[in-house]
Image (cartoon, rainbow, N blue to C red; front, side):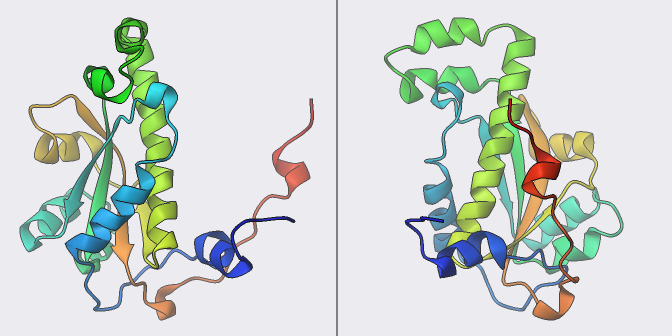
Length: 197
């Protein structure tokens, strides 16, 4: 395999990266969070639409509110993590296209106007940006604990009220406790996951 990144870098981002179930008592400061965002924002999205929206939950009140809307198994993870990010997508993302795609903004706004196209585009590309977020976090040395066990409608009401932003998933970031990591599970082989056509 030819790669521009070193094996150590690829291990950090993919092969050796693990999902912790507990966190070390080490802070994640605002500068680190901004560094993660400033990396992930460059990942490609349809028409540069960039529909993902983020709430960086780090206050005790914010953690308690989010944990109260999470599955029981996820509550302690949210409360212990330095930061848990709510990753959502804005159904009104097209209003930003004059800034994000000035050469074709009007045409693309018309294309994204039907609600079913806007919803599918926002969800798909917001999810991509959530994945870019995790890769960026790992690239700067943070661990990630993505979760989908929470009440979306409650999170939307509590954190996105008055907007057309819908929550997708949440992801704690910090320095994971190595003792909280489960044994590595298998992954599908190339042949099991795909086929040539």
